[in-house]
Image (tube, rainbow, N blue to C red; front, side, top):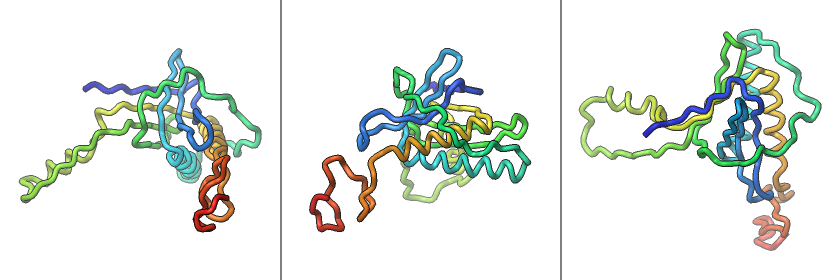
Length: 194
């Protein structure tokens, strides 16, 4: 089966966004450039971790390579909704990050969820090296979205991603679970609505 690599180096716009009401939101990474628009779906926790790890990557690039980093964005940047149509190309299973020292850019790669085949061997394997080689690159034939961003664009992405994640339902002050507009069954109140 063939796979596609959607490369935007650099994109005109790269953002995290959502579709749907709080509690039922679907999270997307969306890249636009060169007349193309690619949207990939992922989980809220993946967006949150991506923002956190990008911040760590920028700090490490500054420490190790002396990269000049912009100050954290104080002004609200891109707050526009996702571009339409929001057609999901694939669901993200793995996110990869790298810093390209030669171009001083951040590379983000979102790789599709793969179908994992689990093999159970009852006897001893004949050759351990073959088993290791098969596990090294299991996702070579999976679709992926690759984006290359400057440190400034990365900071803007981080700030927007954090705003998107925090724009959901407020937490219950007692148990920390998200509150629905109609309330929720709080375990701290023995299941009574709060």
